[in-house]
Length: 97
Image (cartoon, rainbow, N blue to C red):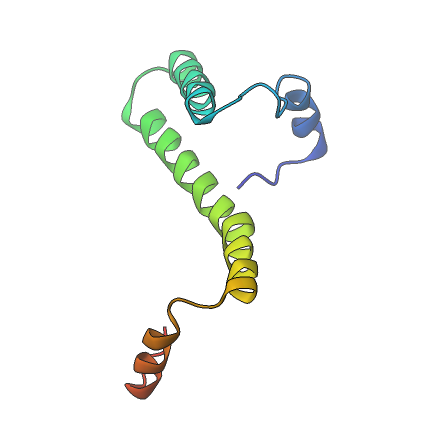
């Protein structure tokens, strides 16, 4: 998880700023560069590769949970739920998510 102590955060804050990437391609390049440097520093072995994939999956999942989900909930409130019909079908079957 990204919730590291303040000393670790301070170490990286000076290296990373939100204004470095202007589009998705550049953001992807930044991720790839970080991953490449990590693998070069620790070597190509299963544990390192697994750690990289796990960190990426964890970061994606936490971003989805903390940012995307609440944003989508807000848009449902503003614009209406497109899954309303499925919700009622699931409820009638006793299978609410």
